[in-house]
Image (cartoon, rainbow, N blue to C red; front, side, top):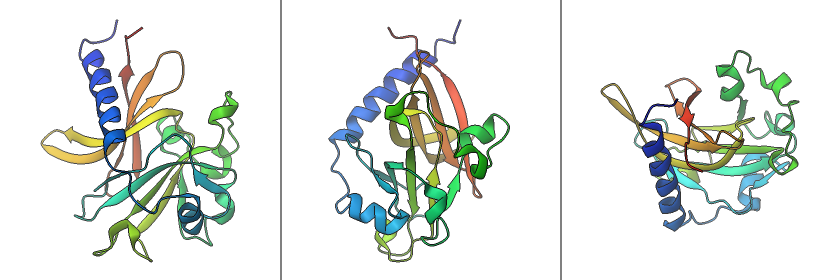
Length: 191
């Protein structure tokens, strides 16, 4: 049986996701913007909204864009981003050169990614030369929301995900100062 705190967390995640949809969508985020930043094989995931927050705790706004990429490794060097797989790293092996070949059983989720831009300077994520860019692969998400995460006495901005699958797992992605880490939080008990 799951701890009682999992159910309230799932409700908070769902409410937070709905509130994030009600917020104004960052302007200028479309397929052209995504392809300029991440290459021609990437585009915005239809039906989702980009979210902003200070993911790397440097005081500058960053952006998370749910997207779809057919071959992100191909554009990685030219467009100056890193393809990372924190989900499979958590489970033991996250080398993107191998894990990009893993395909979702559900074709609607194949190639779904999170495109992250760490902002720099006063233009933040709009900057012509962002601080860093990442393509998060293999996270089996249905919905994501950017919210605060408290770890001990430390609070940081993280990406919460409602994952696809029958157990409706929730998880969190966060920047640890060097890389993105994945952590499962539990399953929802809602029917």
